[in-house]
Image 1 (cartoon, rainbow, N blue to C red):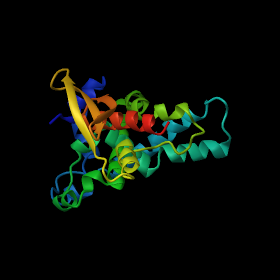
Image 2: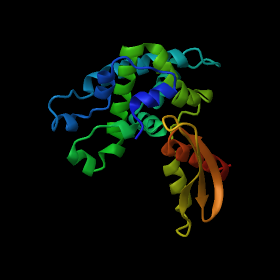
Image 3: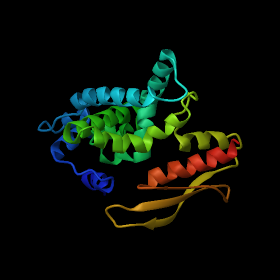
Length: 227
């Protein structure tokens, strides 16, 4: 499995304090079983503040200008729990999460609340270790694209879920994701994925993980189907 340090190096980030990063991905349920570790709630507090500042700085200069109410609503939409969990899934950060046995068994690795808190803690750790440039690196990848259409306020989607919901209207349809190519070195691979509905290729996506490639393939398919 790719380590978080290797994942960050691919994005040009070389972390100084590895323990700080480990803390960002350590859920309180894991600490209950491994008392020598710290959980990520303090870093979550820091990450929330960093995220608020970053998003405000990006929203304020948008043209045409948004009103205070529009800016507040857009920021809330961008940094809500569901949105943050979506960013974490898009980056496949859940693979680095340390969970307690019980939380793992009950699907904690895919819970919005846990993923959102982890994502904020991750940003907090990056900021403390590297400053805002590292935060920029990550948020420019997953959050900045949503600012291209600021008045489309309902803009945060888990495209795999939305595509599945869209095709479920016909019970006969099935959605499958097929890996068609893997390239690059083992510590920084690139995956290319097709999304196939009843034997038809409807979308294609690439990503640094299979999950990210699947999301991008689903986004491609969904955008074509709803035109």
